[in-house]
Amino acid sequence: MGWKNKIVAAVVAAGLTAFSSLTHAMGELENVTLDVFVYPAGAPLGFIEENVSRPQGVDVDIVYELQRRLLFTLRDNRIFPLQRDVAFARLENDTADLVIGSISYTKERAQKYDFTPVYYRSCLAVVYSTRNHPEIKSIQDLKGLKVGYERGSTAADFIHETGGQGVPFENNIMALFQVADGQLDALIYDRPPMLDFVNTMKTLGLSVTNDVFGEAACEFAFAMPKDSRYTSLINETMNTMLQDGTIDAILKKWHVEKLEDLKQKQ
Image 1 (cartoon, one colour):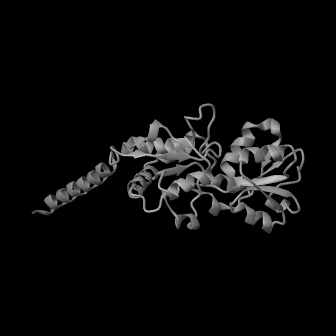
Image 2 (cartoon, rainbow, N blue to C red):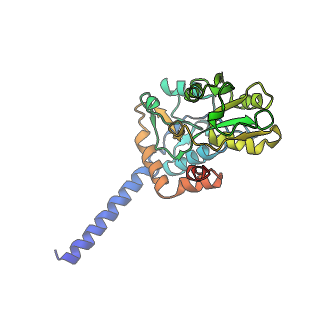
Image 3 (cartoon, rainbow, N blue to C red):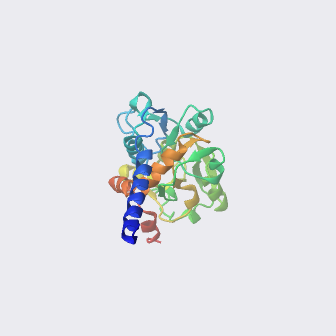
């Protein structure tokens, strides 16, 4: 075979390999029904506005794009809202296939669950009342204050380090109202839903600090049961979506703040 024919053969072989890989992922779960649960921590990642049966947000849009590519069916044709701890319990007893909605990848969690690739990185944030504590500018200003944190989250460590008095909560929305009415001096939580809440509920007089901390606790991904038979296909498809710009387009649709832009404010 001449060298020109060899080049043509190599190009064709490469194209066939790429096509085979693409068709392997596309539609691979056509006859599969998945149980998907969303923790509605708040916009933009996962939230409920009017219809409890139709959650919205970045995470939801990514799941629908996964469904479009892999052709799986959603149980009862919907994504079910559920508290995070209950959703993780379902992963452990194999009654959930995918848990989404402000789910942070950590090494500790990865010992118990499978994860998709990280699709978005952010940080934690301090939420405070501009009426009650206008002096708060960063996490360093929390010494001696009552600071709320989600029970079991790493935010408790930051509060302890700064000399604040940690107060655990179960519901982040209720905790935000407690900050507004002075029952809590501040709270620490994932920045994306906090920023959206503060910008939406302007009459509460809340604000979010712009200091960057807790990045390791805010690497967002989806969780699956450990050694799930769907992990490989879902992760392969997620990686393709990251590479072809699909996930970036979804983030832009929801006006998600970029971490690099926040860092430039420092």
